[in-house]
Amino acid sequence: MSNNVGLEMKEKAKSVNLIEYLFEYHSELISEVGHNRFVHPDHDSLVIMERGFFRHSSPDCRGDQIQFLMNFLHMSFQDTVRELCAHADESGMKLEEHQLSRNAKEKFFYLPYPTEDIYKRVWAYLTTKRGIPAEIVQELFDATLLYQAEEYGNCVFHYDGAGNYAEIVGTSDIKFRRCAEGCAPGAYWACGNINGDTAYVCESAIDAVSLMALYRKYCDGDPAFISIGGLKDISINNVRTKYENVIIAVDRDDAGDFCYSKHNDLPRILPPNIHGKNGEKLKDWNDVIRYCDNEEKVKKSIEIFADMGLPF
Image (tube, rainbow, N blue to C red):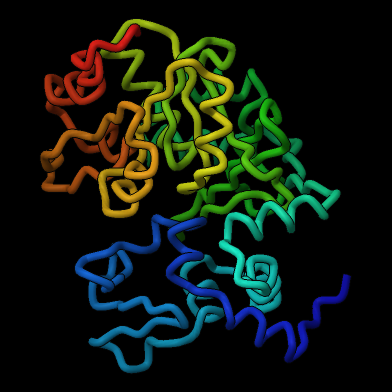
């Protein structure tokens, strides 16, 4: 396939609503801090708009949708244009509906090749930087739910029990996470007791694994832990068709609140509303496993739905 992208493709890429795109596919890169004011979570002076971004304190840090993905997802120009074109809203459809239509036409699901060496980069990243217990990382290796990519040494969380799906996470200091090319619409990643009747739904595979580690430490039972790779309603609905008891466990932030507002007939658990041992804000379950040493608060945050009279 040619690496060239033409003017028509660039214009199509620039038609994407960046705010909607980020909330749908990369919610970790956007936060709503006021009415219709959106910023990067780690750079509150970086304002995100429908057609691009700028940083008040740095006049040179600005650009359009293409530049944003290049800067913060570390994608090449050609890959960025093709990514945005794939999600461009050509006929006024919602992004989710367009994604369904686009994926229905795609026949190829691309998985990164696994390395033939031991998975030492993935092991070190997850156990040392992310605080995941070593026995759980080994469990995922053994179950072929996780491997190390040959190129770049990324984590690849792969699961095909709900359609072809893989989540790719970087192992360097540069933040990188995306779904593999050609994932099936509504597919997701799952670990734990995937054949049971109870499932916890998280935004990322690392959060799902972190919650599984916390659950096993503080709670009884053997549920499934699921990543929907963002905040995708279609994936949540697919989880609901498979599992009798579904608990929403997305991030403690505005995007997570908005997602839950559309599924508020389900119970929800949240990371403890406290700061971590060094003052860190606990937004997701991996923050909890890395930074929180208040075991009573952690246990209560996971078990709180039990007070709602549910049958599990």
